Length: 196
Image 1 (cartoon, rainbow, N blue to C red):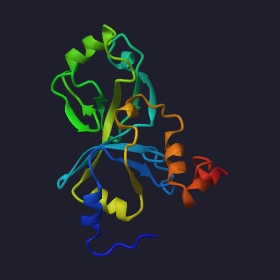
Image 2: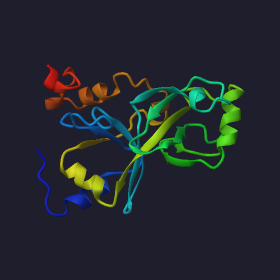
Image 3: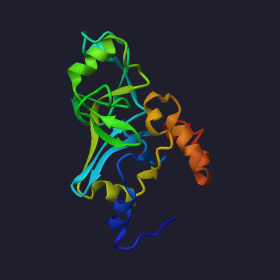
């Protein structure tokens, strides 16, 4: 176990970078948003952090929410903040103007009208874009405090921009297995161990 000194928040903050993955510790149980979540950190600075849960698909498609888009791309629960707003990440900045790079060729947002047209004419596939309702947000030092409280594990995004098309069914479990060690016991545990 790592022991942190009083400069812990500064040390953690220096490790956190946009583009990293935050893997929910197995001890997060009973929290519907964050239990077994993997979050792509979209922004991190001294004022706070923003991320999108990338492995929690909802029962909606983009066509359910925006009927003029003729596609059945899944919508994901991005997090508990502003769940009435739609956000998206993608790996095609050359097609979607005004997008902002997160890292590793992953981009956030951009011109939505162009995006709708590109989806409808077949220029964008589900491997290029992922839609979210809501996002995950932390105020200044809040994420660092959660890290200090062992709520999250920081991991590099080894998938780079291919993470957008990655299947999410067992994504948390795959990440836990990669961590190895004491985490392996959690890889086959039921989602709610109290039901075991």
